[in-house]
Image (tube, rainbow, N blue to C red):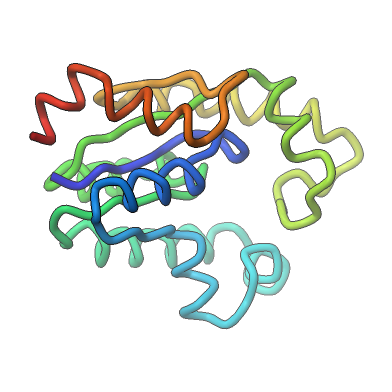
Length: 171
């Protein structure tokens, strides 16, 4: 089974996924990084040049590719859940693990980053809250959910790997 991480930006999907892939000796794929590599542009530049709709189509194509792999760890962009087709592909061979944190924690983690196109606005905290509310019903469509507040990515990885439910499905 693949381990698939979903959740809002800043919840630790990429860092936690990378740690788990190393601990399990599995391949690691970050869908945003794959898109950037494929098009030679940052996610922010893709949003500026082509728009979010174009980005989401590219994202679905990447999801189709990586979801066919076996026994890998996949970190998905925060908006991947907005397209139910993505979740169908990811569930075929994957366990979906949602990572979450409060809007305040997410804001603190991201406030000094300038590579988050959806937060390039005059009120990023309000935007985080709005997007979290919009996506909440999508994020709950998962097999397991873990709160990442007050934990390092390594601690989140250990929490996931020591979870009886995850261990049962993996081993």
